[in-house]
Length: 135
Image (tube, rainbow, N blue to C red; front, side, top):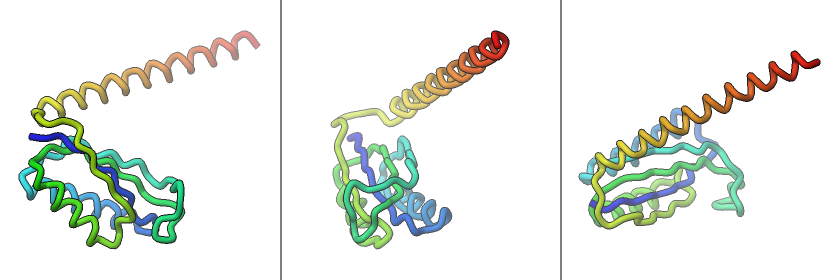
């Protein structure tokens, strides 16, 4: 299977339920076409570099998935027809990949990041308490 990454921008005026419905729709479209969703990363509302369809902000979503080449045509067709999508771009990351290994690797990376963040927070709290003791 090939490994792809699609980033798309959703209309910022949609409610949270509507935004999650759009994300669910495209995840389902990948799975319907015999693809495997590896990771969905919602970046939230951000300011756009330039106005797209008269919008200055948009909700960014990063979708990593595996599938055959035909999955791209169907996914981009769906995004083109959906008025809630402002812009999208797809990039092929790898020609042959095992989706289960990717998921395991991403989960491991996420756990490492969470551990580092927790350690950093703990070290900041201890240095703050030391500073208060010195005063």
